[in-house]
Structure formats: C-alpha cells, structure tokens
Amino acid sequence: MRLIPKVYYFYKSTKKEFVKKLLTILTFLFVIVHPAFTPADQSPKVDTNAKIKAIFLYNFTKYIQWPADYQTGDFTIAILGDNASLYKELSNMSKVKKVGNQPFTIKLISDASEIGKSHIVYIPKDNNSVVTKALSTVKGKSTLVVTESPGYAQRGATINFTIAGGQQKFELNKLTAQQHNLKVSSTLESKAVLVN
Image 1 (cartoon, rainbow, N blue to C red):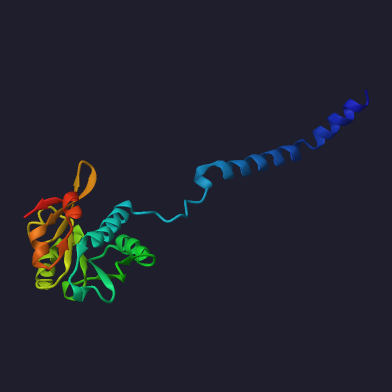
Image 2 (image 1 turned 60 degrees about the horizontal axis):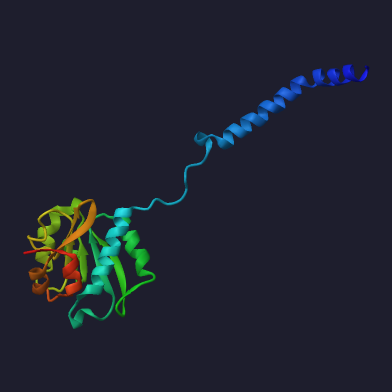
C-alpha cells in the first residue's frame, strides 16, 4: 500500500512541471500545424496568361516565313511596354529553343522608335496609345505586329489576341501580313479568325 502514496506524491510534486511541459508541447504543435504560422508559399507565381501568350508567340514563328534578309542573326521579339511576366516566359524559352536556325532574343522597349529590325512586336492592351506610332514605325518592314485589343487586326496589326468562349484565340489579317512580306501557312490560317 505504500507504493500508491509514493506514486501519488511523485505525480503531485511534478504536476506543475507536467502541465508546463504539456502546454509547451501543445503550443509547439499548434504553431506547426496552424496555417497562420506556416510560412507563405515561396514558390514563384506563374502568370498563366503570360505563359499562354508566350507559347502562342513562339508557335507563330513556326507558321510564318520571314524574307531571306530576316533569316540571319538573332530572331528578335520586342515587347512594347511593361510586361515583365511575358518577358520572363519568353526569355526562359529563348534559352532552350530556336526559331529555325536562329537563336532568339527578347527585348523590352518603351517607345516605338526602339523597334528596329524586330521580327515580332507585341503590344500589350495597356499600351494601346502607342499602336498607331508602332504601325507607322514598321511600315515597309517585315515585322509581325501582335496586339490584344478589339479591332486592332482591322487597324493594321497582323495578329490580335482575343478571348472567345473562355479560350485564347487570335485574329489574323492576311492582307497586312502580305504587305509586310510575311508568308502565313495555311495551318495558321485554319486556326485563326480571319479578318480584313
């Protein structure tokens, strides 16, 4: 019978320590498990819109033929305006892909005067104010102008991104392509919404 009082005494004397340890353990578990205390996801966010447009822009190069004097040196895609997500996606692609035999480079430009001999100029919708100047700058050049605002394929852009049925689509102005000496394959035509 003397064993029970000893155990009880031991328990009673360590009760405060036991409760402290139990509370410490429970607090530790709460901090680990509770989402408010877990670090935010450190993985980089992917801009799916930029990723889709980058894939489209790269794939356009497979179905459009530029004149011979545009088939040497680097193939250049210029982004007119601030679009860091698209720049990043295209830059990543340029590290592992080529356009035909040409390495391709991406440049962010802030003014239409910087277009130079770019093969493709992409103008984001938040930069519509420069479309007219860009179209004037590429007149007589074999530059594919790609926009993303309603009506721009009819106003001089060769390709204009649109959304139809919740999916990314594009309009193609064949006449504009011909004026810039760009040969568009029938495959690309079949995938496009043709406009004049």
